[in-house]
Image 1: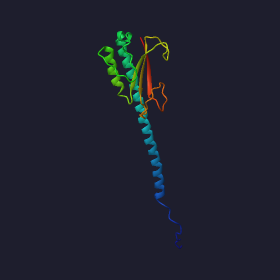
Image 2: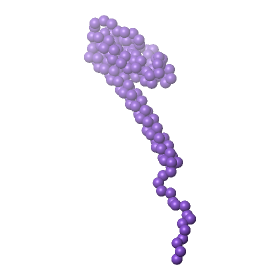
Image 3: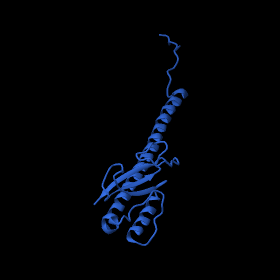
Image 4: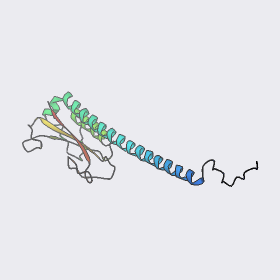
Length: 163
């Protein structure tokens, strides 16, 4: 028997450069997706942290108001937005400390209004509306409408305090 010549092309072994490049492309797309997911997760976590802080601040001043019913009855816990409280009374000291804590939020603002017949929501004269506002998206928003328009207004949290 005579040897048969092998005219067939040898089969490839290993990966071609094209296959490696396609695998790297797929891997990089997956890693970019993970990076975007991580960024979104961090942003959501930071927003949740700000909302938690705002809630804690609102409950903090309401606890201070409960501890000083005479100051509440005298109307000493009314704080217009953007004003800095002054004085040495218990209510003034509470408002100064609380106002400083609110400014730790980005663009943080606070106000406490005493309800009257024209308030929204309507309530009696011994009820207060505690409002904490902050720039959740850190866009430099300055609007004070509550509930906010997302593009222009500060995010707000309201707590209705009634003894």
